[in-house]
Amino acid sequence: MQSILSFSIDVLRFFHIAAGSIALLSGIIALGVFQKVNYHRRFGKVFFNAMVIVFITAVVLATYRGFEFLLCIAFLSFFNAYRGVRAMQILKGGRVLWFDQVAAAAVLLTGAYMLYLSALAAHGEKWSAVIVFAVFGTLSIYLAISSMREFKGVSSKDPYWFRVHRASMGGALIATITAFSVTALSFLPDLIAWLGPSIVFSPILALIIRKSEARRAGV
Image (tube, rainbow, N blue to C red):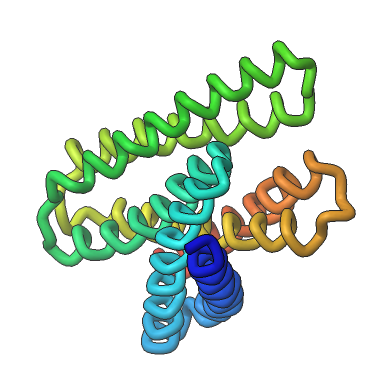
């Protein structure tokens, strides 16, 4: 029985790594060809489907291993991708669903739990963990509250949803880069491995979004 369980975990880990690799590659390509709508959509769909597999396997693996923080990160990472896809659906006239608010509430709870983990780490004087938990916890809470307001207050077909799509999918891509940094670049200090991708790539993403908006506006 134990050998079967161990084999199952190994299989899940394989699919998790494979899906994460596909998400990273397809996400970078989708960002690179964002001006070519058809290619962007194709690679975007690959990216999202890979993120679904990453999320499911991450939840199982993190629960099995008792990695509470990684479980919370899985919710944060996938919610970005989910929010990005839903933004485009709502932009095209789709309705806000009850599950949208439930998903945002789940991220809100995981964010609050990460702040709790940060407080525990402070008690143990694990200062790098304090910072990482606090940053991702605060980010989760901010994203969840913003999403709840958007789902409730922004009407369908509002161009604002296009901005939400780009920012959310960009956030999901940064999450995959962070996962690569933490696992493949383990020689880096924890703070750099966890926070470096956000610090480096968030301004780049913001610049790309700003330029694309200016181009669409004919500036």
